[in-house]
Length: 374
Image (cartoon, rainbow, N blue to C red):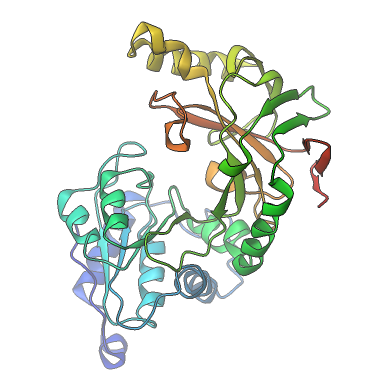
């Protein structure tokens, strides 16, 4: 683990690069020798450092609203070091109590960070975590939230994502649009989703269960957000979903060449059709199911979450962090719904995005062929 990067005076910055900066650069280059801005598709004719800095300021100033004297911890790994450095630089313009930690790259989503990092988290007012794998559902983050931190996680963030698309949204406006949904959702319990590929599925929701806080503004203690942000989502009422879902946008972090057709009965996927991806999904979920008690194995196929994107700048890129936020799309997740209050505690949770759905809440249509109309 590289040491925290200290804040330097202007004189020091002009005179030389610190040893810490050199260490971080070496770690980043060793991990991602080809992960340059040019290779990620960013226009090299633009002033890239300015673009990256402006994105970092959007995180520190708008999303997190860092205040003078707050303890701020930026946690990155060797795959996201360039982003971590940019956020660190922006944060030091707001507070003089900022640390940047480079931890080893994790192996999967939800893996606990090293104990020194977890201990540091519990001493912060603000935690920003651009890492390869998500720290959102770790004990370390939950402990920091209980102690009053506010947290933004950015799993899988690349430089290209950081300077384009969903990260460029006006999050104040995104928050307003999502907040405005509350009156529309109130007392509506039946959701109907259709599209031209054959999606036709209905299910019930408890209207009070809609989550409307994924809007990118994380400015109070014990708040947590993903960035890029911008979606409204809910737990489908267990046992109520029936019909067909055709995933044509992305599945997990893969842009689909051929749609996936899921047949749903009583909230459970009973069949999945498609190209080789369908076979891979059956194998993946089957391996998870084999580790569960026999009575729980069917639950891996629970339709665990439904949501729709509210970020007008988000794109379908093959990265789920951004894909499910695109305005006019919707998504269904299969697997674990325990974090939303359901009973399928199965340890796998994978979303698929429908690119141009039509969505009704009771008798009110909110999306028409991928166009948000309310």
